[in-house]
Length: 418
Picture 1 (cartoon, helix red, strand yellow):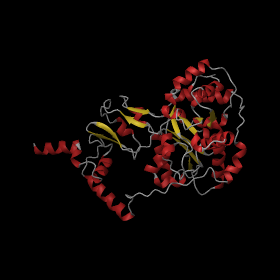
Picture 2 (cartoon, rainbow, N blue to C red):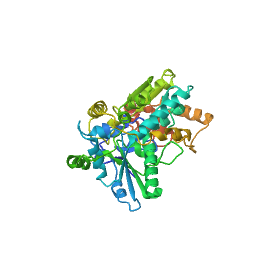
Picture 3 (tube, rainbow, N blue to C red):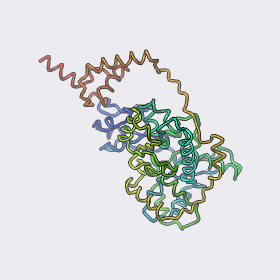
Picture 4 (tube, one colour):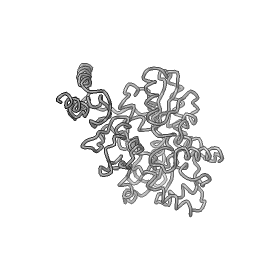
C-alpha cells in the first residue's frame, strides 16, 4: 500500500502556510519548495486543508489493482462510521450497502457494530482503572501520533484498546474463514476511509500487532461510483448499522456510546494541542475521558470525505434521530469472551531508537540548541525554511541547515557592513 500525503512541487509556491500549520513540524522549505519529513508526518491532512494552490493531494495509487488481486477469493468492505453522512438525507442505508457490493465486494461489514463492542470495552476500562485520568481515546491515529511525537509523557494516558476498524476487520475475516473454509491470504479486507491517517494505523500501528486490514480505500475515490449506483439500485435486504455506533462519526459520539458522562470531545489539531497542554500541566485530572479527533467535527471532517463536515454531522444526526434502531449486532454476544481473552487490548511497540539520548546527553543537546537559538532573532518568520526559530536551531544542531540560512541575520550583517 503506497498512498500518503503527496506533494506536487510544480504547484507548490513556497508560501509557508503548510509549514506553519503542521502540528509536528514535519515540513520545511528547501529551495523555495515544501519538503515533508516522512518520519515526522502523522498524516493528519492539515497541509492539504491550508494549501491555497492544491499542491498536496491525499491519493491512493494502488487499491484499484488490489481489488482484482487473483489471490483474493473473498473481498470484504468495512464501512467507516461517517460514510452514511456523505449522502443526502433520506438516502436508504440498504442502497448504500448494495452500491458498495456492486463495486466488486462479496460482503459489507459495518464498523458501527464493532464500535459498540469497543465502546463497552472503553467503559469497563475507565470504570476499573481509577489511577489514570484522563484517559485519551485512540480511535484517531493522527491524534495518537501527535501525542507520541510531541507529548510522550501522555502515552500512559492512552486507552490502549483496538479501534473499531481493527475489531471489524478481525470479526469479518473470521466469519469468512468459518463460512467458506478460506485461508487468511484468500481474504481481502478493505477499509473505506475518511482520512489518510488510517493508512498509518494499518501499515505501522503503534501497538504490538499486525493489522487485520489489507487495504485502505480513500472514500473520495469511490464516491462517484457509489452515487451513481445508489441512484439506480433497488432497495434490497441489508444489515442495518448500529445507530449508537454510527455516532462515532461525530465528536462526542464514542463517549455517548460508551455511556461516559465526564468527558471532553475536542476536534481540530489546534484545539487538541491546547487540551493536551492542559493535561500535561495536570489541570484536567478531574476528567475521565478525552476524545481527541484531528478533523473538524470528528471523522465526518476527514479529508477523504466529500460533504462539508457540518452538513455531514447533520445527516448523521438525522439518521440516528429519525430511524428505528433495527440493527441486530451480529457480534455483541461475543463481547464477554473477547474481553476476557484480551482481544481488545494491546501494548505499545518496543521501539529501539539508536538516536535516543540518555539524560546527560539530552541536557547537553538542549543547552547547545539554546545557545544557537540565542543567536537567532526570534521572529518565527519562516523565511529560513523552518516554521520557528527553535525549529531552525534544532535543524542547525542536526546539521540539516546553517545559521546563515536566517534571512534576518544576513540582512543585519549587511546593514552593519554599510
